[in-house]
Amino acid sequence: MLVKDKRIAAEGVNTLHKTFDISGHAELQAIRKAQAKLKTNDLSDCSIYASGEPCAMCLTAMYFTGIRKIYYSSSLAEAVANGFEKSEVMTDQNLKQLKDSMIYLPLAGTVDDPVRLWAEGVNK
Ligand SMILES: [Zn+2]
Image 1 (tube, rainbow, N blue to C red):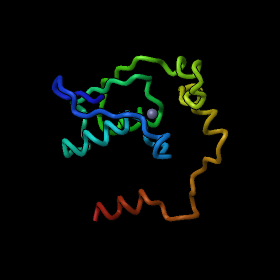
Image 2: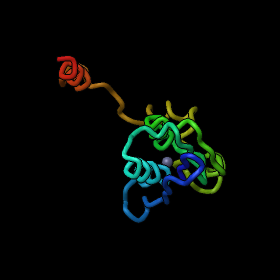
Image 3: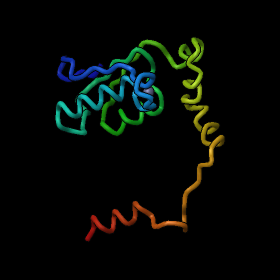
Image 4: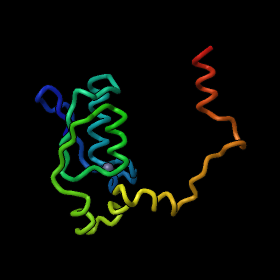
């Protein structure tokens, strides 16, 4: 649930099991709805209330939208203890282990750097 000015701006429910979309976490659903409703990407004047401690994906989205007040009921540790095994990799101490379990390399020298190309276009 996303709150702005002490009122509910948007709510979300977890849809990833129905839509087969891994980004269907309730927090992201609420953020999408709030951004569409308020017609802004800046939600820095909003707070979010979640049933569980946000995962790294949702926390990152909150950071990008400017949300800095996040309240949750259950911790990631409780989620893991109750069978949400993928929550385990989302803790700070395990993010490095997650990256180490993947091929996670910059494409330096093999393609044009899209950020540099974008910056050159912006600065023209
Ligand atoms: Zn999440």
